[in-house]
Length: 73
Image 1 (tube, one colour):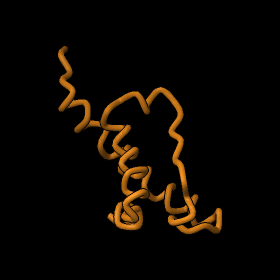
Image 2 (cartoon, one colour):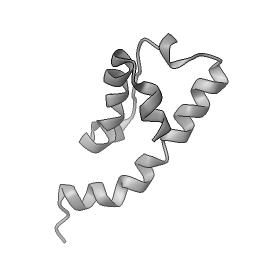
Image 3 (cartoon, one colour):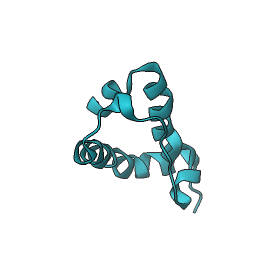
Image 4 (tube, helix red, strand yellow):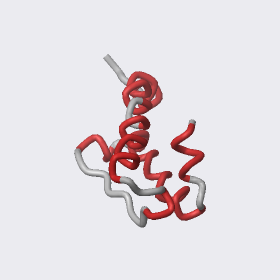
């Protein structure tokens, strides 16, 4: 069986989308605003997957002041 990157990303998309709410909860529980976050550290084997690293966009959006938008999607 051949599994393309596109198909793999399609299959894992629902799982990756489920990471948004825990991110929101973590920020809320920490009692900080997104403007107070300087760095985001991703750990684990899954973060080697390009699609899973897309949350790294949060770092870029954070620097642009648009992290609130990313978390609201």
